[in-house]
Amino acid sequence: MTAIVVGLGSAGDVHPNVGLAMALRRRGHRVVLVAASVFRSLARRAGLEFAGLGSDDQYYEALHDPDMWHPFRAFSVVARRLILPSMRPIYEVIARYNEPGETVVASPGTAFGARIAQEKLGVPLASVHLQPLTLRSAFEPGCYGFPDIIGHLPRPLRGPYLWAVDRLIVDRLLANETNALRAELGLSPAGRLFDRWFHSPQLIIGLFPEWFAPAQPDWPPNVHLTGFPLWDGADLRQRSPELEDFLEGGDAPVVFTAGSAMVQGKEFFRVSAEVCRASGRRGLFLTQYSEQLPDPLPDGVRHFEYVPFSAVLPRASAFVHHGGIGTTAQALAAGVPQLVVPLAHDQPDNAVRVRRLGVGEFLLPKDYRTGAVVERLNRLLQSPAVRENCTRRAGDVGGSRSLEHACDLIEQATGLRPAAGSSLRPAR
Image 1 (cartoon, rainbow, N blue to C red):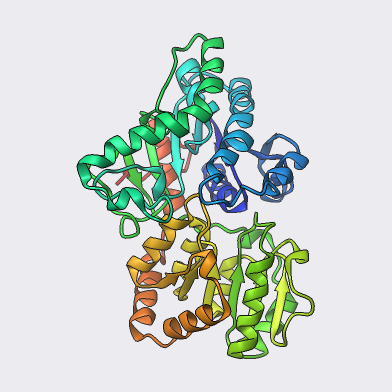
Image 2: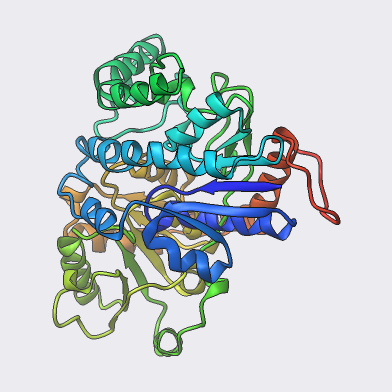
């Protein structure tokens, strides 16, 4: 059987899907990873067949779009630089590999081409959502930004609010081009694309645990939560002697990152350097874009382009980050206090959940100033309650078999036959 696994976005979006693809391959299936072309080398290291989307230049042009991290305009960037350009190529990849009765697809909701392929070609589809914000609810709505408008509305008004958002924003950006492809393929028009349409009617997998985002009464009935996947590529990389020397050379550092895709983080790292200098704490800065860093860095601060979080967070004192779901999950697994600085996309919702769990705090970007950050870090590091909550949640994450559970669900719900010797367990 062939499984086509689609990962759209930056490394934080693609890594969990690489982990899922590798788990399916271990069960004996042929697996094709579909992602932006820049992830070709990652797929090669993982031993996966690969179908690239777009060019490397297009990927980096999107990252450099000044609105990519704007709290209100970011969705427009995602629509015109990610969702729409990938729609037809994803459909064509699936059509090329599809053998009826022998192929399934696992993809995020933003991979519109996969949903269209399910409708047109009958290819079984599992919608795989990394973040709870993708699953809408009028009972306990996610936080889409600050101010949290929908969260402060009375429940009867939340449905009409989302209807207005769909009609005035989402469909206005996405519906014309999506329905043009649908018409070309003989499909009727679709609307409210980010409501129920982009979920597979067969299977929806949430790669997060219920204690992080409890299931809601108005979620689709075919939602299954499997826990955090936590795959970060550590098994494909050699350990860094330089990192080991730094970690062994003093107190546990505070780790700072603005995300693997952040090319506009100069102010974040400038303030972070001042925080380390003012507090006397050691710091570890993670970014692939060294031009964002102040020069020179303060004593006791080191920079690395990339380090798997699982290799460093268990030895950190605190973690300051942007609030991407993969980053947040790794911090929970490591039991490290978090200070989240959310910008856009799912980051505000993840930041609110971190605070709600008592494992960290958040500061809006406009408030990310030296004094405020030092004060929040001191409060987090001196709190017995935060320490206890972090330890408890690390225990909840520990031992997760999220990706194996997801494979079980995909095999059962879509008819993908497990290979000989596969241990198929009942879906929960």
